[in-house]
Length: 378
Image 1 (cartoon, helix red, strand yellow):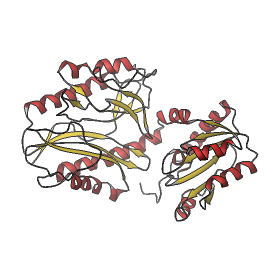
Image 2 (cartoon, rainbow, N blue to C red):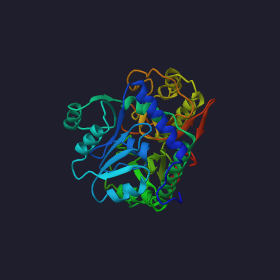
Image 3 (cartoon, rainbow, N blue to C red):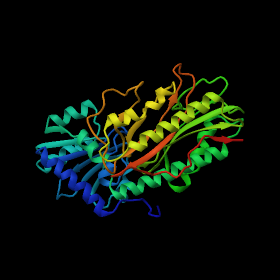
Image 4 (spheres, helix red, strand yellow):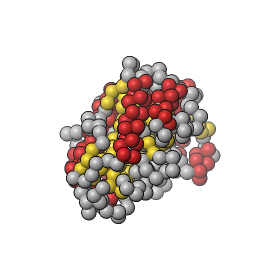
């Protein structure tokens, strides 16, 4: 965290580049394009250390110096500073054409692509090269975390926990959901963290109107007797934690909210009890049965892969499946969020609990240190 602009070790980047080289060899490719376009796509950051911003076109080939074009011109000086190990250019608003020219200079024929590219640009590439999309293979590489990546995720978890602690300490009647969001951000920005999400919902326990934390804050003001729930993720660069909690304001939980909360915690414990290397998707879904047994269901996904993206396994519960079960098992050093958003069947009330964990050979590791519990703030 004391580096001017944090980078992984050279050994970690070498590990990633070796994996990309093997991917290219399996697909018979001579060059690989790693892309951020229209502010979407995080692969350039994983490969180079540059966080993409608006547009980044990276050319990668084992044994050759990487080449990158970036937009906009005021982003170019920092990109060059953060990536002294590679050739960096300002795209001058025609970065795609620069990339095509560089590929031709290198004699490229069969080119792989990781990252989003709008249709017009993709078709332009196809006029010059045989193109193969590799997004699925890239996602697979991101699903299993290295030890260094786990360290960065622990930082993201700590920053997210700091946001939660600030929210619990700062919530009081009269503040709006928007002001609660500002409280959350204030806890980690000073440490170099940035916001991925802070979903925060506030509702009356006597007359609830929401059952899952909304993605955008409203001007609704906190009142005594309210329930608040949140889903918070602060980034340490591309590595975020995710912590989900529920708390009451100036009052004890009503019987309904107590039942919802206890069911959610029981579901979290049941799922994490079976979470381990080799656990099947059916084992995980079976573990959620306490939700239906207690007369409730869910809205949000109950488990999803996390850390560099929103990955499989994406699972629901018996009463709200998330589509067909993925044909996979949990693997050591996957990182997943377990987040039982237990709700009433009439979609009026709900709670949110859970957090990011690491799958181990025999179980799981908590990456967060935030306390669990149905908190009360006064």
